[in-house]
Image (cartoon, rainbow, N blue to C red; front, side, top):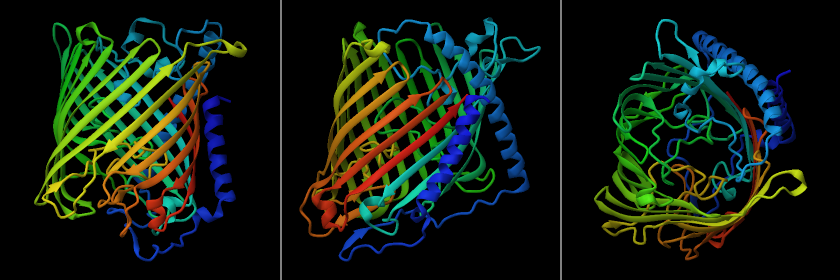
Length: 537
């Protein structure tokens, strides 16, 4: 039986076993907030939602599953062939666990190279020529993923969800990428997702089948590159900034309704955009444009300037919200961010540095905030220990996000990233990059181009005493009268295994030692576990 199907069935079996072994994770009882302390609930949190599928929704789900299974069957067959071919090849000079061609943003994949070669197996899905339309083709792809997140207890034991529980999540993505000649392209992606075990349901946990992306590109070739004008629902990739992410760890990814214009050549990419986030509802094809929130700006990427082995990003963008909440209160906000990012490699050294300044308004206050990120590491030369390729890397990374040092001042110093990954500071995703600074030495071991083992130690502290600690969206932790700055120390080990070009297994464990400020708020230390199995085609 194809390996992808076997793996997916194993994931479902694992899910059932987890539920059996962690009965308390499905309990709906809530713990009170410790007296004298605060841990606010998410602003948009809702009670557990039972998704009701209409007849059309059920038919659409069956169609997605059928397409998914066909893709997995073809993909796994091809994976076995490629595994045999690669085993005979010599190790490359650098070892990486990214041997598959699939991208985080699936619309970035380009299979036009298959036009001139004999296609077999999974390639027949990636390039389907259209009869009677020279240079036109259709590409199919998708993803099936199971993920377990377990907390013992959640959020340091604070708030209504501050107890032991586990969240079981399944999602299915299917996309259709249509190219009509060299000038027109449309990309459509549907998703469906289910989650259980979380005490308070989040909007992006589950949904009946819905349109995640659907955009049209008009492409104008130039002498050295191209100009692209994109309109529709899209995952708005601008660049590799630390402050922008697609929210991939959650079941339903972040997308926007709007426009993007891009110029691209071998040395330079410039993007300008104007868009509104997509609001998520649990029903069938019922997501909507969130008009109360507006995102616009520009992003530039320069590669190898003056022949140097560097990449420079520069950006200016603004996020406008009808309502935002911080320790000083709730008000309308128009927050602009301007910054730059520098990355490069030289010998075994790898480095990233990014700094940003924010301005704008929050209610009647003027925003003036700063944020920074740095990641420096050294990747040792690969060796063939025990007849397999092994390559270690050592490094240290850190973040800084200014805090509100005077809650009554007319100047607001809290730095808040526009759309960051929830795991930007720590993989347990419970501390946001606002009023926080961290330092995280880490070690990684790349084994045989398919396996990565990692370990790190993370020290997280507050920046401003007056400001609160910011957790998941809309959540604040406040210890009244506490002058402590220590938030947490986190020990983590993780593993990512690319079983084949199409299958990936990821596991992670971390222990979070509560700092003095968290203890003053009534919190305590906890454990976090993650298991994820993903098939892509």
